[in-house]
Length: 78
Image 1 (spheres, rainbow, N blue to C red):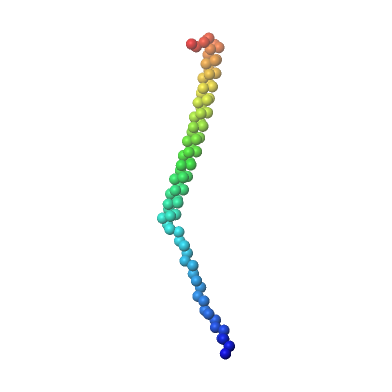
Image 2: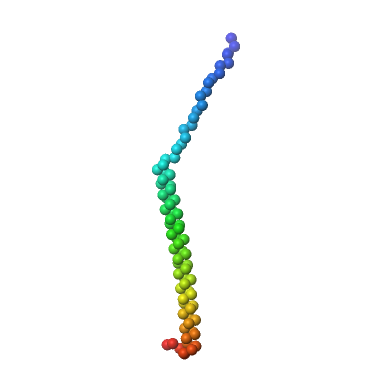
């Protein structure tokens, strides 16, 4: 007897969608926010420090030039 061809009805297998845990995403978001805030504050502090150094050098040079100008008009200040 010849084996009959039987069709096997296969049901589709649905893979469960792996939903990321909201708590894990929230934690990563908070960490990213903190890191971003720290980088922002570090850049801001660096800009302020460089600005301070520029103003300090400008005031020092301005005072030196003013002192030499005054000494040229009146003689030594001290």
